[in-house]
Length: 154
Ligand SMILES: Cc1cc2nc3c(=O)[nH]c(=O)nc-3n(C[C@H](O)[C@H](O)[C@H](O)COP(=O)(O)O)c2cc1C
Image (tube, rainbow, N blue to C red; front, top):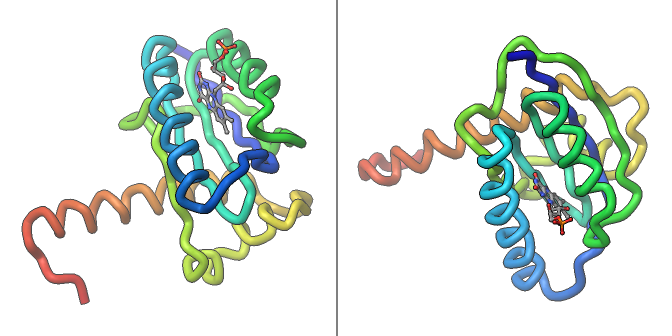
């Protein structure tokens, strides 16, 4: 099956305290994962400083149909497609949809993310951002499994 992958950024349009917004994002991700699983889509949603960055991958018809739905959603604005390309393999195959929370400290080390959140998407490498998102998930799952095994973090 031919896979395509897209990456977009948008301005979040959720109202409430950080905790309330966090709950709303959790709910978006939960429902998205259910729907995506039914359509063979995988991906990740990063949110930080009022911005969503989402990677979504799968077969073309399902991907296009879902992205159209996402674009119409009033919970965000100014959806800007950063990349839409054929891909050799899935990079988010383990996740029908997963949330990535980017801490402020993390952003300091990730210039490509900082640029995306400041809405100047020119000169930002979409592939680098996609790989960064994947690295963040892998790092998160490693530290989670270490915590579960009781490995002390330095
Ligand atoms: C930032 C963001 C990301 C979303 N990601 C997905 C997604 O990956 N898959 C999905 O089916 N819906 C996603 N949604 C929800 C859709 O926009 C839409 O509300 C949902 O699919 C239901 O569509 P419907 O009300 O037209 O049936 C997302 C919404 C937002 C705000």
